[in-house]
Image 1 (cartoon, rainbow, N blue to C red):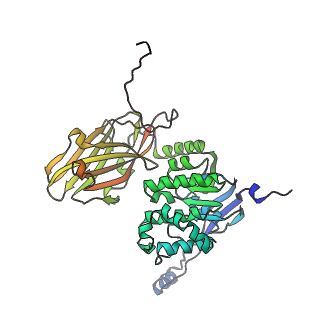
Image 2 (cartoon, rainbow, N blue to C red):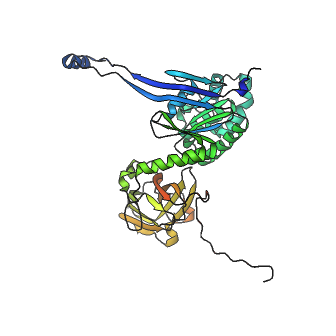
Image 3 (tube, one colour):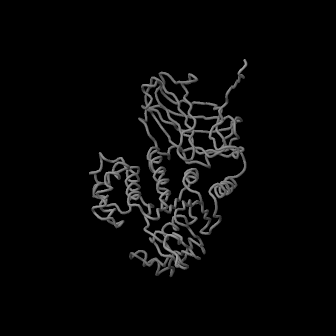
Length: 420
């Protein structure tokens, strides 16, 4: 008896290679033609091999994470599986209908409304008009765009686009779903909804491919991880095992020294996305160890020193600092408010600086730090002057094998037996 489609692997790659050919570019103007005729030089042709002899078998119902440094071939792999680009050599077999989410605007017409684009995308996925009407309300509810569904999508933000794109992809119910960093554009609520939908999708026995640099998201969604390095399969195995090995090499690349010039590891504060009224603005931020040295790496329980320089555009009644530490999967795990230590600039105009030493409760892991300047008082909590979100990365080292908790909470305990 021959094997049925359900019993065969959903995806098979056999010695797959992908090479991009960069051909000679001839002159496109009289100036270029003159220069080339004088120098007798043409740009040399070259080939770039993005994937080398890749062998991979994925069964139906598997949730696969794909990790690796930039340029390792992750997106190329997804494009090959999706059929966007052909393989150069080898054999690639897919079984079932595929939906790929690698570009927020793919399949959307910018001048059509969200509603019209739902019908357009669903038709491209092969859905009948009757089927679209059946799932239309579910798509709108999941995307949360009821108030903007008749607005042209060219006016949508990245977050709105990703919500609409993901909602359509989920409800057309493909056999293989390919995601490339798509979840990072949504807000925290939508990311939670998307993770719940992906878990439901996996329970249906569907195949799921997820490319991401956010390792915590990969850990929470995938049981198996593929690690690509320079187009080659570096490691393939259980999620925890592969990610632990990958994190070890990334730490090694960054250097084992505990004190690093922080300015070498981050963009200047002016290059980050800024929010707020700009009545006061941060001009420099430093994160240091207890010795005052710029630092990216801390041991569990080691104090973290923060220095935030700022200046105001006018005299302000009060200014306080908020510091938030967040994990790689966009979860805020620790918050500090300077007003709790009565560190507030009052009736202030000019240049100032907050210097704070934080007793860190963070366990071993990768973290981001966010900063905000704003007026003091709960009733004015959201009237921030300046906010820089998730822009400063740091690492906490320690024994991360004991449990997966993010915080170490000090406590005092007492017990009594029944006789006392």
